[in-house]
Image (cartoon, rainbow, N blue to C red; front, side):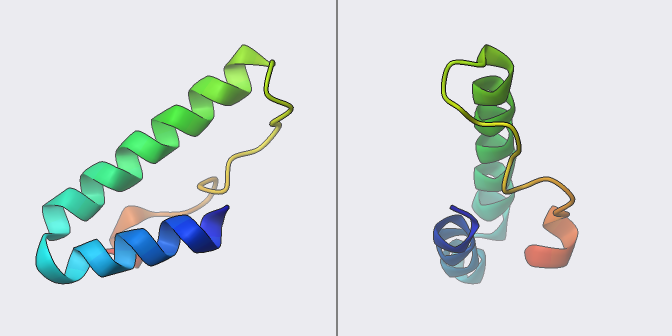
Length: 57
């Protein structure tokens, strides 16, 4: 869920912004993979239309 991921990313951006960017990227890739697999019941990603620069800076 987006709220959980956002909490983790915002906590990490305070101490290591580059790690927060990596977390965002890996999470987006994971969701895109799960959607493409069509076996997890996912049709959208909570990261759709989210920009790391707006969230992390």
